[in-house]
Length: 379
Image (cartoon, rainbow, N blue to C red):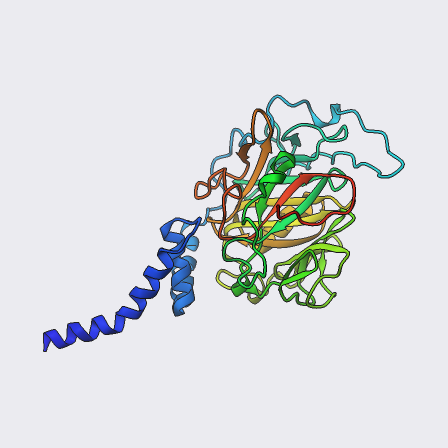
């Protein structure tokens, strides 16, 4: 009887063991634990992962108050002069160059050294900084929460979007699944994309080709062939037109016309697993009133507090990108004797070389701007 019972158990669990083993031996950029969680989600275990994550993140959520920080994490080039000291470039007949943004206004009455002050990350482009980064504390009630913010000058940069090894799942062309080697001499930054397709049915399109069907009404990051970038609610059908280099969606807008989306309290719209109210690492992107792109990452965020950070940083339209501790990634690059990556967001689960080697998930790359129409370069 015991032998029969053991045999029955083996027969029952064998498909799961085979499936799990098959997933573990596939090429991947992820450690075993995140891949195991992804496998469980794909095999009817979403409810269990949700319960564990809700319990864990609720248990580890910060309490209000507590000791103040005495200094902020250092980001950008420490020896760089204050951005205001950079001479303002003269406009050219063809293209009006952007000016650096004003410092982010401190939330606290007594700001720390460098709080909200932009620092460049590398050499100037056309006389100005193409990428600026800063940090600031976001909530007076939670004095130890820090946001990491990047600003990308739309007149000096071009944004590319690349598929990963498994995302989007039905990508017709994946390319290198990393920053193309031929483009690394002009690489300025990389950052994570949005929710995987299974968790949000978020569409995507690259160089006029459908990667996943675009859905009307979803927040969409769009790079146009003339170099402009925008974030807006999509209304253009299932595939982007010829004037668009890429379009990538992720849930509805969280900021629109400079105001918070009134539906932010609806937990069904802002994350299949953790919803809107669990305090966890969250990332987002926004567009300021001049058309420049803003990226934000911060721990212990709800979707509402994330939207407020983007709004405070100057975004007039914004979207949530990926969440959870495994995924926030903002890396900047310099070219001193070779490509030198520097992690801005302190994610210990991802290396600074992420996106320089094939990665499982899709991502964005920021390049210095070149003349002519822009198409996402795969070689």
